[in-house]
Amino acid sequence: MNRPPPKWFRPEATLDLHRLTVAEAEEALETFLHASFRAKKRTLLVIHGAKTLSNVVRRLLDSHSLVTGHEPDNTGATRVFLGKHP
Image (cartoon, rainbow, N blue to C red; front, side, top):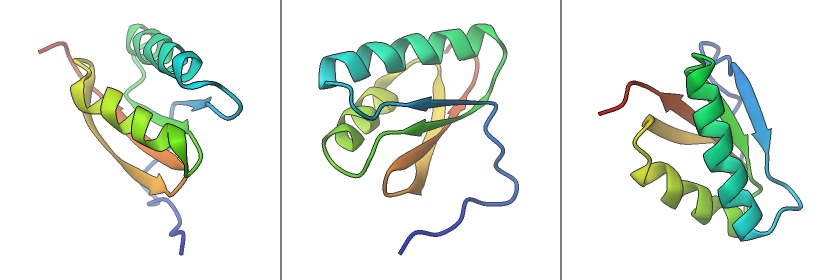
């Protein structure tokens, strides 16, 4: 069952990775994170679908220096929080 996003969460930018290959999705996500950070956006939504790309997105977000946290929005999307460089 999908739960609605919390009322407090309003993404400042959204990236949809549907129909991309794993390599294309990794590159698009990397570019999106850096562009969002430069634009001072701190709350993001990444739409990836519930299958293959969800693990790719989670792995990249777990190790990314700009990401201060991330959590599922639903089975096919992830809320991402950006912060300062460590």
